[in-house]
Amino acid sequence: MSSTHLPRIGIIGGLGNEAMVDLVEKIDAIKGADKRAFIAFGNSRLAYKPDEVMQSWKPTDEPELRKADTAIYTLRFMQYLGADVMGLACNSAHDLFRNLLPDVPVTFVDMLHRTAHTIEGTQDKVLVMGVNSLVDSGLYQAALMEQGVASTKPSVDNQQKVIAAIYDPAFGIKTAQITPDAEALLCDVIRSECEQQGCSKVVLGCTELPLH
Image (cartoon, rainbow, N blue to C red):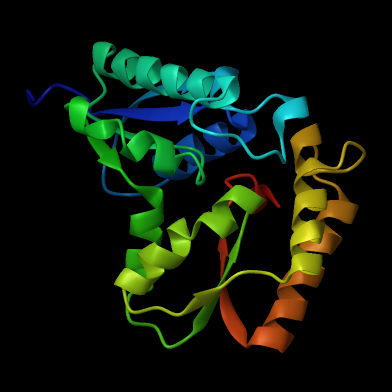
């Protein structure tokens, strides 16, 4: 890389473009470099369609094949545009992208591993919040365990509140608005789990949860 070349940071979105924009703004606000160049690419084909959400899909089912094909295309597109480093503005999609990264010669910043690393060795129990596929997959729990951190997920009832806060058609985060109802549900879950399970730290494992 020449001294005049601005580092090109690729941000992959499409699973909630507000989260993609939010991530770009947060990276740009980090001190230490005067200028950065960003490549932000949001492709809704990476996300489930409304009628596909909350269903169990096999790797050979059409929604999963579509997402895998789109992920490969997106990684190659980022490479073609000259991204020097890239990240993914979605927590649960990391599992899909990790399987494809060995074939793409671009540095990838793994949000789950980096998050776990920031609290390495803490004695606090961490509550992992996010969509069902994320909290049930154990992706964050495994990353935290590697750093010696104990973690847990919400109870069944509280997980339903998290899903409502994200997906409810009237007030959920996916309606592209910040609503008091969604915020109240998320606060209720955190308060309840802190009391019931002794959690004192929280991972907001859906990239749109920090928008609140």
